[in-house]
Amino acid sequence: MTTTTALDRRRWIALAIVMTASFMDLVDVTIVNIAVPSIQRNLGASFSAIQWVTGGYALAFAIGLITGGRLGDVYGRKRIFLLGIGGFTVASALCGLASDPGILVATRVLQGGTAALMVPQVLSIIHATFPAEERGKVFGMFGAMVGLGAVSGPLLGALLTEWDLFGLQWRPIFLINLPVGVAGLLLGRRFITESRAERVLRLDLVGMALAGLGLLMLLYPLTQGREAGWPLWGFVSMGLSVPVLGLFVAYERVKTRRDGSPLVELSLFRVRSFAGGVAVQLIFGVTCGIFFLVWTLWMQIGLGWSPLRAGTTGVPFSIAVSAAAGISVQALVPRFGRKVLQAGALVMATGVLLYLGEAHRYGTGIHPWQMALPLVVMGLGMGLIVAPLTDAVLAEVPREHAGSASGLINTTQQLGNALGLGLVSVAFFGVVDTAAPGQAVGVVFTHAFSHALWWLVGCLLAVFLLMFALPARTAAAPAPADSREPQLVG
Image 1 (cartoon, helix red, strand yellow):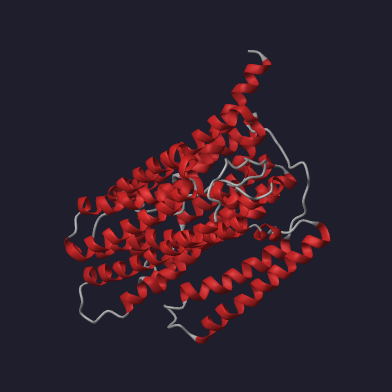
Image 2 (tube, rainbow, N blue to C red):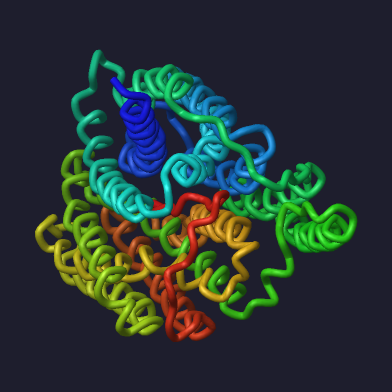
Protein backbone atom coordinates (compact mmCIF):
# COMPACT_ATOMS: atom_id res chain seq x y z
CA MET A 1 0.00 0.00 0.00
CA THR A 2 1.45 3.41 -0.96
CA THR A 3 1.94 6.19 1.60
CA THR A 4 -0.65 8.37 -0.19
CA THR A 5 -3.27 5.60 -0.08
CA ALA A 6 -2.58 4.97 3.61
CA LEU A 7 -2.95 8.68 4.44
CA ASP A 8 -6.17 8.86 2.41
CA ARG A 9 -7.57 5.88 4.31
CA ARG A 10 -6.56 7.38 7.67
CA ARG A 11 -8.35 10.68 7.07
CA TRP A 12 -11.61 9.01 6.03
CA ILE A 13 -11.49 6.83 9.13
CA ALA A 14 -10.81 9.97 11.18
CA LEU A 15 -13.88 11.59 9.54
CA ALA A 16 -16.02 8.58 10.45
CA ILE A 17 -14.81 8.79 14.07
CA VAL A 18 -15.56 12.49 14.60
CA MET A 19 -18.90 12.26 12.79
CA THR A 20 -19.90 9.29 14.94
CA ALA A 21 -19.02 11.27 18.06
CA SER A 22 -21.07 14.21 16.80
CA PHE A 23 -23.95 11.86 15.98
CA MET A 24 -23.72 10.46 19.52
CA ASP A 25 -24.11 13.97 20.96
CA LEU A 26 -27.03 14.87 18.68
CA VAL A 27 -28.86 11.64 19.45
CA ASP A 28 -28.23 12.06 23.17
CA VAL A 29 -30.10 15.38 23.16
CA THR A 30 -33.19 14.00 21.41
CA ILE A 31 -33.15 10.50 22.88
CA VAL A 32 -33.53 11.79 26.45
CA ASN A 33 -36.63 13.91 25.76
CA ILE A 34 -38.73 10.89 24.81
CA ALA A 35 -37.65 8.99 27.94
CA VAL A 36 -38.25 11.85 30.40
CA PRO A 37 -41.69 10.64 31.65
CA SER A 38 -40.29 7.13 32.20
CA ILE A 39 -37.37 8.60 34.16
CA GLN A 40 -39.77 10.69 36.21
CA ARG A 41 -41.92 7.69 37.14
CA ASN A 42 -39.04 5.31 37.82
CA LEU A 43 -36.97 7.64 40.01
CA GLY A 44 -39.89 9.49 41.58
CA ALA A 45 -38.43 12.73 40.27
CA SER A 46 -40.18 16.06 40.66
CA PHE A 47 -41.03 18.02 37.54
CA SER A 48 -38.29 20.55 38.31
CA ALA A 49 -35.80 17.66 38.51
CA ILE A 50 -36.75 16.40 35.07
CA GLN A 51 -36.37 19.95 33.76
CA TRP A 52 -32.81 19.82 35.09
CA VAL A 53 -32.18 16.44 33.44
CA THR A 54 -32.47 18.22 30.09
CA GLY A 55 -31.68 21.79 31.14
CA GLY A 56 -28.56 20.89 33.14
CA TYR A 57 -27.02 19.27 30.07
CA ALA A 58 -27.90 22.26 27.87
CA LEU A 59 -26.53 24.79 30.38
CA ALA A 60 -23.22 22.97 30.94
CA PHE A 61 -22.87 22.43 27.20
CA ALA A 62 -23.54 26.09 26.43
CA ILE A 63 -21.18 27.50 29.06
CA GLY A 64 -18.38 25.14 28.05
CA LEU A 65 -18.64 25.39 24.24
CA ILE A 66 -16.38 28.39 23.64
CA THR A 67 -13.87 27.31 26.28
CA GLY A 68 -13.86 23.79 24.83
CA GLY A 69 -13.00 25.18 21.41
CA ARG A 70 -10.28 27.37 22.88
CA LEU A 71 -8.76 24.40 24.74
CA GLY A 72 -8.51 22.55 21.43
CA ASP A 73 -6.79 25.52 19.81
CA VAL A 74 -4.25 25.74 22.64
CA TYR A 75 -3.58 22.13 23.66
CA GLY A 76 -4.40 20.26 20.45
CA ARG A 77 -7.75 19.32 18.96
CA LYS A 78 -7.09 15.60 18.93
CA ARG A 79 -6.08 15.63 22.60
CA ILE A 80 -9.14 17.58 23.74
CA PHE A 81 -11.45 15.54 21.47
CA LEU A 82 -10.20 12.31 23.04
CA LEU A 83 -10.55 13.81 26.53
CA GLY A 84 -14.10 14.88 25.65
CA ILE A 85 -15.25 11.58 24.15
CA GLY A 86 -13.69 9.65 27.05
CA GLY A 87 -15.40 11.90 29.60
CA PHE A 88 -18.69 11.75 27.70
CA THR A 89 -18.56 7.94 27.75
CA VAL A 90 -17.86 7.81 31.50
CA ALA A 91 -20.62 10.37 32.17
CA SER A 92 -23.05 8.32 30.06
CA ALA A 93 -22.28 5.24 32.17
CA LEU A 94 -22.86 7.23 35.37
CA CYS A 95 -26.19 8.53 33.98
CA GLY A 96 -27.25 4.96 33.24
CA LEU A 97 -26.35 3.87 36.77
CA ALA A 98 -27.99 6.84 38.56
CA SER A 99 -30.16 5.74 41.47
CA ASP A 100 -31.92 9.01 42.29
CA PRO A 101 -32.85 12.26 40.52
CA GLY A 102 -30.04 14.30 42.11
CA ILE A 103 -27.33 11.93 40.89
CA LEU A 104 -28.87 11.85 37.39
CA VAL A 105 -28.95 15.65 37.19
CA ALA A 106 -25.32 15.88 38.36
CA THR A 107 -24.14 13.28 35.83
CA ARG A 108 -26.12 14.98 33.05
CA VAL A 109 -24.32 18.25 33.87
CA LEU A 110 -21.03 16.33 33.67
CA GLN A 111 -22.15 14.85 30.34
CA GLY A 112 -22.91 18.33 28.97
CA GLY A 113 -19.53 19.64 30.11
CA THR A 114 -17.63 16.80 28.44
CA ALA A 115 -19.71 17.20 25.26
CA ALA A 116 -18.51 20.82 25.25
CA LEU A 117 -14.94 19.51 25.04
CA MET A 118 -15.74 16.99 22.29
CA VAL A 119 -18.15 18.78 19.94
CA PRO A 120 -16.20 21.98 19.10
CA GLN A 121 -13.26 19.93 17.81
CA VAL A 122 -15.30 18.14 15.13
CA LEU A 123 -15.34 20.79 12.40
CA SER A 124 -11.84 21.91 13.37
CA ILE A 125 -10.49 18.38 12.85
CA ILE A 126 -12.33 18.13 9.52
CA HIS A 127 -10.86 21.47 8.44
CA ALA A 128 -7.34 20.40 9.38
CA THR A 129 -7.69 16.95 7.77
CA PHE A 130 -9.28 17.73 4.38
CA PRO A 131 -8.17 20.20 1.66
CA ALA A 132 -10.50 23.05 0.70
CA GLU A 133 -11.67 21.39 -2.52
CA GLU A 134 -13.00 18.35 -0.60
CA ARG A 135 -14.65 20.13 2.30
CA GLY A 136 -17.90 20.79 0.43
CA LYS A 137 -18.48 17.06 0.01
CA VAL A 138 -17.46 16.40 3.62
CA PHE A 139 -19.75 19.10 5.04
CA GLY A 140 -22.59 17.72 2.90
CA MET A 141 -22.07 14.34 4.55
CA PHE A 142 -22.00 16.10 7.89
CA GLY A 143 -25.34 17.79 7.18
CA ALA A 144 -26.91 14.45 6.25
CA MET A 145 -25.65 13.01 9.54
CA VAL A 146 -27.29 15.90 11.45
CA GLY A 147 -30.60 15.11 9.75
CA LEU A 148 -30.22 11.41 10.53
CA GLY A 149 -29.56 12.24 14.18
CA ALA A 150 -32.73 14.34 14.36
CA VAL A 151 -34.83 11.50 12.96
CA SER A 152 -33.26 8.55 14.77
CA GLY A 153 -32.91 10.03 18.29
CA PRO A 154 -36.60 10.02 19.30
CA LEU A 155 -37.21 6.63 17.65
CA LEU A 156 -34.18 5.04 19.29
CA GLY A 157 -35.16 6.49 22.66
CA ALA A 158 -38.70 5.17 22.28
CA LEU A 159 -37.56 1.69 21.29
CA LEU A 160 -34.97 1.37 24.06
CA THR A 161 -37.45 2.58 26.67
CA GLU A 162 -40.26 0.36 25.36
CA TRP A 163 -38.14 -2.78 25.10
CA ASP A 164 -37.00 -2.50 28.75
CA LEU A 165 -33.80 -4.43 27.96
CA PHE A 166 -32.67 -6.64 30.89
CA GLY A 167 -35.24 -4.86 33.06
CA LEU A 168 -33.20 -1.64 32.87
CA GLN A 169 -36.19 0.49 31.75
CA TRP A 170 -34.86 3.89 30.49
CA ARG A 171 -31.19 3.31 31.36
CA PRO A 172 -30.09 1.87 27.96
CA ILE A 173 -30.61 5.32 26.38
CA PHE A 174 -27.40 6.30 28.17
CA LEU A 175 -25.60 2.96 28.27
CA ILE A 176 -25.77 2.63 24.47
CA ASN A 177 -23.08 5.33 24.33
CA LEU A 178 -20.51 3.07 26.02
CA PRO A 179 -19.45 0.80 23.11
CA VAL A 180 -19.60 3.72 20.67
CA GLY A 181 -17.51 5.95 22.95
CA VAL A 182 -14.89 3.29 23.70
CA ALA A 183 -14.51 2.50 19.98
CA GLY A 184 -14.22 6.21 19.17
CA LEU A 185 -11.57 6.69 21.86
CA LEU A 186 -9.42 3.77 20.70
CA LEU A 187 -9.72 4.49 16.98
CA GLY A 188 -9.31 8.24 17.49
CA ARG A 189 -5.95 7.75 19.19
CA ARG A 190 -4.73 5.88 16.13
CA PHE A 191 -6.24 7.68 13.16
CA ILE A 192 -6.87 11.36 14.06
CA THR A 193 -4.01 13.74 13.27
CA GLU A 194 -3.14 16.37 15.89
CA SER A 195 -3.58 20.06 15.02
CA ARG A 196 -3.54 23.41 16.82
CA ALA A 197 -4.46 27.01 16.06
CA GLU A 198 -1.77 29.04 14.31
CA ARG A 199 -2.20 31.91 16.78
CA VAL A 200 -2.25 30.62 20.34
CA LEU A 201 -4.77 32.35 22.61
CA ARG A 202 -4.93 32.30 26.40
CA LEU A 203 -7.75 30.81 28.44
CA ASP A 204 -10.21 33.21 30.08
CA LEU A 205 -11.05 31.33 33.27
CA VAL A 206 -12.37 34.42 35.10
CA GLY A 207 -14.70 35.20 32.20
CA MET A 208 -15.96 31.63 32.18
CA ALA A 209 -16.61 31.74 35.95
CA LEU A 210 -18.52 35.05 35.75
CA ALA A 211 -20.62 33.89 32.78
CA GLY A 212 -21.43 30.59 34.47
CA LEU A 213 -22.34 32.25 37.79
CA GLY A 214 -24.58 34.85 36.15
CA LEU A 215 -26.44 32.28 34.07
CA LEU A 216 -26.84 29.92 37.02
CA MET A 217 -28.24 32.75 39.16
CA LEU A 218 -30.84 33.34 36.44
CA LEU A 219 -31.74 29.77 35.49
CA TYR A 220 -31.67 27.98 38.86
CA PRO A 221 -34.48 29.98 40.52
CA LEU A 222 -36.43 30.02 37.24
CA THR A 223 -36.42 26.21 37.15
CA GLN A 224 -36.59 25.55 40.92
CA GLY A 225 -38.82 28.47 41.92
CA ARG A 226 -42.15 26.79 41.16
CA GLU A 227 -41.38 23.80 43.38
CA ALA A 228 -40.20 26.10 46.19
CA GLY A 229 -43.30 28.31 45.96
CA TRP A 230 -41.52 31.21 44.19
CA PRO A 231 -39.62 32.43 47.28
CA LEU A 232 -38.04 35.88 47.64
CA TRP A 233 -34.48 34.53 47.25
CA GLY A 234 -35.34 33.38 43.74
CA PHE A 235 -36.32 36.85 42.57
CA VAL A 236 -33.27 38.34 44.33
CA SER A 237 -31.01 35.83 42.57
CA MET A 238 -32.54 36.55 39.16
CA GLY A 239 -32.21 40.30 39.79
CA LEU A 240 -28.56 40.02 40.86
CA SER A 241 -27.75 37.96 37.76
CA VAL A 242 -27.97 41.19 35.73
CA PRO A 243 -25.06 43.00 37.49
CA VAL A 244 -23.02 39.77 37.50
CA LEU A 245 -23.43 39.43 33.73
CA GLY A 246 -22.69 43.16 33.45
CA LEU A 247 -19.45 42.55 35.37
CA PHE A 248 -18.67 39.77 32.89
CA VAL A 249 -19.02 42.21 29.99
CA ALA A 250 -16.81 44.78 31.74
CA TYR A 251 -14.15 42.14 32.46
CA GLU A 252 -14.21 40.98 28.83
CA ARG A 253 -13.43 44.54 27.73
CA VAL A 254 -10.48 44.66 30.12
CA LYS A 255 -9.34 41.22 28.96
CA THR A 256 -9.47 42.35 25.32
CA ARG A 257 -7.23 45.36 26.03
CA ARG A 258 -4.86 43.34 28.22
CA ASP A 259 -4.01 40.32 26.04
CA GLY A 260 -6.57 40.06 23.22
CA SER A 261 -7.91 36.69 24.48
CA PRO A 262 -11.44 37.29 25.83
CA LEU A 263 -13.95 34.48 26.16
CA VAL A 264 -16.37 36.55 24.04
CA GLU A 265 -15.22 38.91 21.28
CA LEU A 266 -17.42 41.90 22.17
CA SER A 267 -16.48 43.82 19.01
CA LEU A 268 -18.60 41.32 17.07
CA PHE A 269 -21.73 42.94 18.48
CA ARG A 270 -20.93 46.13 16.57
CA VAL A 271 -21.89 44.19 13.45
CA ARG A 272 -25.67 44.74 13.20
CA SER A 273 -26.42 41.46 11.44
CA PHE A 274 -24.42 39.48 14.00
CA ALA A 275 -26.06 41.14 17.02
CA GLY A 276 -29.52 40.60 15.52
CA GLY A 277 -28.63 37.05 14.52
CA VAL A 278 -27.49 36.15 18.03
CA ALA A 279 -30.83 37.43 19.34
CA VAL A 280 -32.58 35.23 16.75
CA GLN A 281 -30.54 32.22 17.90
CA LEU A 282 -31.37 32.91 21.56
CA ILE A 283 -35.13 33.20 21.07
CA PHE A 284 -35.26 30.32 18.59
CA GLY A 285 -33.43 28.22 21.19
CA VAL A 286 -36.06 29.23 23.78
CA THR A 287 -38.78 28.11 21.34
CA CYS A 288 -37.23 24.68 20.88
CA GLY A 289 -36.45 24.27 24.59
CA ILE A 290 -40.09 24.85 25.54
CA PHE A 291 -41.70 22.84 22.74
CA PHE A 292 -39.83 19.55 22.82
CA LEU A 293 -40.21 19.06 26.58
CA VAL A 294 -43.89 20.04 26.90
CA TRP A 295 -44.74 18.04 23.76
CA THR A 296 -43.28 14.89 25.31
CA LEU A 297 -44.97 15.49 28.66
CA TRP A 298 -48.34 16.07 27.00
CA MET A 299 -48.21 12.95 24.84
CA GLN A 300 -46.96 10.54 27.49
CA ILE A 301 -48.37 11.87 30.76
CA GLY A 302 -51.35 13.87 29.53
CA LEU A 303 -52.54 11.50 26.79
CA GLY A 304 -51.07 8.34 28.34
CA TRP A 305 -49.24 7.29 25.19
CA SER A 306 -46.34 4.84 25.25
CA PRO A 307 -42.81 6.11 24.45
CA LEU A 308 -42.96 4.25 21.11
CA ARG A 309 -46.24 5.85 20.09
CA ALA A 310 -44.95 9.28 21.07
CA GLY A 311 -41.63 8.69 19.28
CA THR A 312 -43.19 7.58 16.01
CA THR A 313 -45.57 10.55 16.11
CA GLY A 314 -42.55 12.84 15.72
CA VAL A 315 -41.20 11.12 12.58
CA PRO A 316 -43.08 13.40 10.10
CA PHE A 317 -41.66 16.44 11.90
CA SER A 318 -38.07 15.18 11.67
CA ILE A 319 -38.40 14.23 7.99
CA ALA A 320 -39.90 17.64 7.17
CA VAL A 321 -37.02 19.41 8.95
CA SER A 322 -34.41 17.45 6.98
CA ALA A 323 -36.17 17.92 3.62
CA ALA A 324 -36.74 21.66 4.05
CA ALA A 325 -33.18 22.21 5.29
CA GLY A 326 -31.72 20.73 2.10
CA ILE A 327 -34.02 22.69 -0.21
CA SER A 328 -33.46 25.89 1.76
CA VAL A 329 -29.68 25.94 1.40
CA GLN A 330 -29.42 24.56 -2.12
CA ALA A 331 -32.28 26.27 -3.94
CA LEU A 332 -34.14 28.93 -1.98
CA VAL A 333 -31.62 31.03 -0.03
CA PRO A 334 -29.35 31.71 -3.06
CA ARG A 335 -32.39 33.15 -4.84
CA PHE A 336 -34.46 34.79 -2.10
CA GLY A 337 -31.95 35.40 0.72
CA ARG A 338 -33.29 36.54 4.10
CA LYS A 339 -36.93 36.14 3.03
CA VAL A 340 -36.53 32.36 3.21
CA LEU A 341 -35.63 32.49 6.90
CA GLN A 342 -38.48 34.91 7.65
CA ALA A 343 -40.87 32.67 5.74
CA GLY A 344 -39.61 29.78 7.88
CA ALA A 345 -40.54 31.64 11.08
CA LEU A 346 -44.04 32.39 9.76
CA VAL A 347 -44.55 28.83 8.44
CA MET A 348 -43.46 27.37 11.79
CA ALA A 349 -45.81 29.76 13.63
CA THR A 350 -48.62 28.64 11.29
CA GLY A 351 -47.87 25.02 12.19
CA VAL A 352 -48.07 25.90 15.89
CA LEU A 353 -51.45 27.58 15.34
CA LEU A 354 -52.67 24.48 13.47
CA TYR A 355 -51.52 22.38 16.42
CA LEU A 356 -53.46 24.66 18.77
CA GLY A 357 -56.55 24.14 16.65
CA GLU A 358 -56.13 20.36 16.64
CA ALA A 359 -55.56 20.21 20.40
CA HIS A 360 -58.63 22.36 21.02
CA ARG A 361 -60.80 20.36 18.60
CA TYR A 362 -59.89 16.83 19.61
CA GLY A 363 -58.61 17.29 23.19
CA THR A 364 -57.52 14.06 24.86
CA GLY A 365 -59.06 12.02 22.02
CA ILE A 366 -56.50 13.20 19.49
CA HIS A 367 -54.69 10.58 17.37
CA PRO A 368 -51.13 10.65 15.99
CA TRP A 369 -52.35 11.01 12.39
CA GLN A 370 -54.27 14.15 13.38
CA MET A 371 -50.99 15.68 14.58
CA ALA A 372 -49.21 14.93 11.29
CA LEU A 373 -50.25 18.10 9.39
CA PRO A 374 -49.23 20.65 12.06
CA LEU A 375 -46.00 18.74 12.73
CA VAL A 376 -45.08 18.68 9.03
CA VAL A 377 -45.79 22.41 8.70
CA MET A 378 -43.74 23.14 11.83
CA GLY A 379 -40.91 20.93 10.56
CA LEU A 380 -40.86 22.66 7.16
CA GLY A 381 -40.64 26.03 8.89
CA MET A 382 -37.84 24.90 11.19
CA GLY A 383 -35.91 23.41 8.26
CA LEU A 384 -36.06 26.72 6.38
CA ILE A 385 -34.44 28.38 9.41
CA VAL A 386 -31.87 26.01 10.92
CA ALA A 387 -29.75 25.22 7.87
CA PRO A 388 -29.04 28.75 6.49
CA LEU A 389 -29.19 30.72 9.75
CA THR A 390 -25.53 30.42 10.77
CA ASP A 391 -24.31 31.58 7.34
CA ALA A 392 -26.73 34.52 7.45
CA VAL A 393 -25.50 35.59 10.90
CA LEU A 394 -21.83 35.26 9.85
CA ALA A 395 -22.26 36.99 6.46
CA GLU A 396 -20.93 40.39 7.57
CA VAL A 397 -18.50 39.18 10.26
CA PRO A 398 -14.82 39.82 9.42
CA ARG A 399 -13.05 36.62 8.35
CA GLU A 400 -10.53 36.76 11.20
CA HIS A 401 -13.38 36.59 13.76
CA ALA A 402 -15.46 33.90 12.00
CA GLY A 403 -14.31 31.14 14.35
CA SER A 404 -15.16 32.90 17.62
CA ALA A 405 -18.40 34.17 16.07
CA SER A 406 -19.44 30.62 15.15
CA GLY A 407 -18.76 29.47 18.69
CA LEU A 408 -20.78 32.34 20.14
CA ILE A 409 -23.73 31.59 17.82
CA ASN A 410 -23.98 27.98 18.93
CA THR A 411 -23.41 28.91 22.57
CA THR A 412 -26.30 31.37 22.35
CA GLN A 413 -28.56 28.76 20.80
CA GLN A 414 -27.79 26.30 23.61
CA LEU A 415 -28.33 29.01 26.23
CA GLY A 416 -31.70 29.74 24.65
CA ASN A 417 -32.51 26.04 24.89
CA ALA A 418 -31.57 26.02 28.60
CA LEU A 419 -33.63 29.18 29.19
CA GLY A 420 -36.61 27.65 27.38
CA LEU A 421 -36.40 24.53 29.56
CA GLY A 422 -36.41 26.79 32.62
CA LEU A 423 -39.42 28.73 31.32
CA VAL A 424 -41.42 25.47 31.12
CA SER A 425 -42.08 26.13 34.83
CA VAL A 426 -44.12 29.17 33.83
CA ALA A 427 -45.40 28.33 30.34
CA PHE A 428 -46.59 24.79 31.17
CA PHE A 429 -46.43 23.85 34.84
CA GLY A 430 -47.83 27.21 35.92
CA VAL A 431 -51.09 26.18 34.22
CA VAL A 432 -50.95 22.68 35.74
CA ASP A 433 -50.60 24.16 39.23
CA THR A 434 -53.64 26.42 38.87
CA ALA A 435 -55.97 23.70 37.57
CA ALA A 436 -59.18 23.15 39.50
CA PRO A 437 -59.11 20.16 41.89
CA GLY A 438 -60.58 16.97 40.46
CA GLN A 439 -59.86 17.73 36.80
CA ALA A 440 -58.56 14.81 34.75
CA VAL A 441 -54.79 14.84 34.14
CA GLY A 442 -55.31 14.65 30.38
CA VAL A 443 -57.55 17.73 30.33
CA VAL A 444 -55.14 19.71 32.54
CA PHE A 445 -52.08 18.78 30.47
CA THR A 446 -53.89 19.53 27.20
CA HIS A 447 -54.78 23.00 28.48
CA ALA A 448 -51.19 23.54 29.67
CA PHE A 449 -49.81 22.36 26.31
CA SER A 450 -52.07 24.81 24.46
CA HIS A 451 -50.93 27.62 26.75
CA ALA A 452 -47.28 26.79 26.05
CA LEU A 453 -47.95 26.84 22.30
CA TRP A 454 -49.03 30.49 22.55
CA TRP A 455 -45.57 31.21 24.01
CA LEU A 456 -44.09 29.62 20.89
CA VAL A 457 -46.18 31.82 18.60
CA GLY A 458 -44.91 34.92 20.43
CA CYS A 459 -41.29 33.74 20.22
CA LEU A 460 -41.55 32.98 16.49
CA LEU A 461 -43.06 36.38 15.73
CA ALA A 462 -40.15 37.97 17.62
CA VAL A 463 -37.74 35.82 15.56
CA PHE A 464 -39.44 37.03 12.35
CA LEU A 465 -38.99 40.70 13.32
CA LEU A 466 -35.38 40.27 14.50
CA MET A 467 -34.51 38.68 11.15
CA PHE A 468 -34.82 42.11 9.52
CA ALA A 469 -31.36 42.75 11.03
CA LEU A 470 -29.90 39.98 8.86
CA PRO A 471 -28.46 40.88 5.44
CA ALA A 472 -30.97 40.66 2.58
CA ARG A 473 -28.55 38.50 0.61
CA THR A 474 -25.92 36.16 2.05
CA ALA A 475 -22.86 34.59 0.55
CA ALA A 476 -21.53 31.28 1.78
CA ALA A 477 -19.75 31.89 5.05
CA PRO A 478 -16.18 30.66 5.36
CA ALA A 479 -15.43 27.50 7.31
CA PRO A 480 -12.65 28.69 9.64
CA ALA A 481 -10.22 26.38 11.36
CA ASP A 482 -11.86 26.85 14.72
CA SER A 483 -15.48 27.05 13.66
CA ARG A 484 -17.98 25.37 15.88
CA GLU A 485 -20.44 22.65 15.04
CA PRO A 486 -24.00 23.72 14.18
CA GLN A 487 -26.53 22.18 16.55
CA LEU A 488 -30.11 21.10 16.35
CA VAL A 489 -31.78 21.63 19.69
CA GLY A 490 -34.42 19.41 20.92
